[in-house]
Length: 169
Image (tube, rainbow, N blue to C red; front, side, top):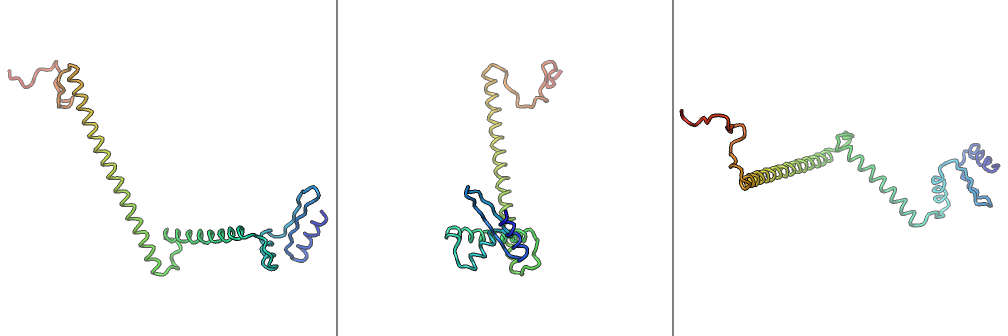
């Protein structure tokens, strides 16, 4: 504990970046860092010329940095597409964004029309299936010995107790 106390004092009094890692004989680790450890290790690697990371880790570090830049660029592009932060853009860039938005609208309209056509086709198929089922039902009723079904809706049929309105008296 005394050495950690001294490391803290050095960090404060000398305004130094201090990193201390201690492993005791049992393997227990104790550590103190006045600044983030990665920051201290990167500075050590830069100043001393010693490579702390192997090529794989270096590649991953570069890939993370590249993806971070790409992510930031995509966020800015999305903001531009939403109409935000466009005051600093050149007319050529604004025209490019306008074309991208026009293409997007065209694709959305096309997709909407495709869905509408599919629904209309489905509706027509269901109507055709309904007509076939009605015809099949009528055929089954005729085969079971019932009277012939009327083509008129039920509301216009005469009830057997009503006089025939077409007969003359």
